[in-house]
Image 1 (cartoon, rainbow, N blue to C red):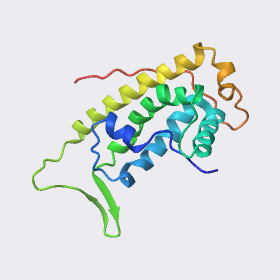
Image 2: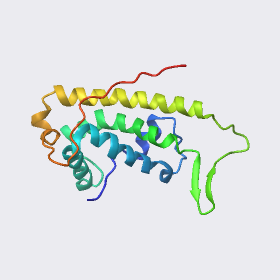
Image 3: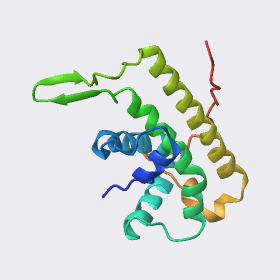
Length: 172
């Protein structure tokens, strides 16, 4: 089955500190990983595949209605931040024929691991918040009739995780 991202590049650059000049090839694979791991875990395989099909059938656009609202209001915000959580650990590294190397610019200062961990922790906190909003929405708003796929996962499908613990941001 073909794969479709539930968000666009601009969703990330407009809603995070990621510069618009960053090459999409550097971070979109991490958005795909976040989508497959975190979003699929939250909504289950059946609903995940339904949304993916709607995006592919609509040439990247979900038709107006409940599924579009679900993606725009609940899935996009958490995917933006889970994508950043996955990407930030690798942002300063490149792998080429010459090996693995770390980027540096003469006029810049490399941030410490602790500083990166703090940024990742903040994005994780945002992602957890939006995950809980999604779960609350899916469990309390009469979604059985609007999103039957959320309830019909079988056998080796991933069943929706209906329990995410919000991890607030801590300053040490």
